[in-house]
Length: 452
Image (cartoon, rainbow, N blue to C red; front, side, top):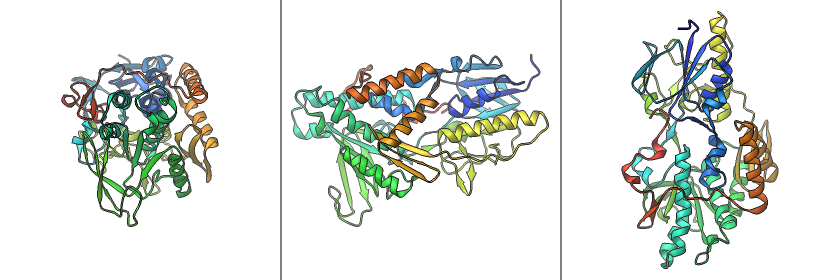
């Protein structure tokens, strides 16, 4: 058995994979544990959900990505428990010892205490989630083609997206583009352009992390695509046939009225409103924040625990009095810092506390539509969309993925075609609700996380 220090990395998302790559080739043994055999490029999950890309185009085998690092071992398995004092993790019930532990298990969808909504409003955290949403959306159009009742058809062609963050905005824009441009010639009894897309946000504006001017621009671009944006509107109930809401608007608005309550009749509802920590984080026995994320110090170390770190979406790291957002650049920079802390620490050296360098934020809204903000510079429309496309291609793992995605995007842009609009799983209808067989009996995909 090698005497080199053993680093166990749990999770092969942006944070875990980057940590493994930074430690690759160094004088340490590394074990990467993930219950999936692939690294997922989550920022493009919505493209899979909206039939723009196929799953293989945004995923790469973990073993293939790390093959060049001979000191890295990959285990396919689920970490069910962690003993921080004994320095062991349980992989499918089998103990695995470590000298250093890097927890990067991400987060799961939060329904803010209404977990029963998951069966009617799937979140978007995994390939399984994306495929389920794609199936629901496409099957809604298929059912509408056969429906003769105008009221039922209208409900089938209404899509409610909950949450005005980047995920919700991207999904809303993509559903509208799918109906208006991609499917417009595919049906005979129904006009896909009649589809109604409603984006519901509880706060006063969408994309609240962006400057107000860009948030307003994003709303305008969504409305150009036919998306109905409802801010200051809180969801109070989700059922198989739609969404009930409560509005805080003081002024009377079209379709909303003046404050009060109402309902959106929709057969397809997608949730993109929040995240929370996983059950693994809750089982660590360490301080957590209100979202169930692990509170860490300025080196991403778990408080009062030797040799254990938490990074990425599962970590609560405060900078300038505010927690860092759950973004891939944050996760990757934290991973590089933790690798440096481990390697320098083995040499008896110290490093400066971690500080996130914000290179900017961006969100895509649709074809030639996006917003971006970096170093005080605001971009919107086609220029922002080009920047978004370029950045996402750079971070895609593997040249083949970049080449395939670039070709797919180029084809979709010029031909308004999406070749990934396949339904590979059988679907069935219960009332106006579209579900997979036995969906109610299985655990919702949106409630799953790496170790949950």
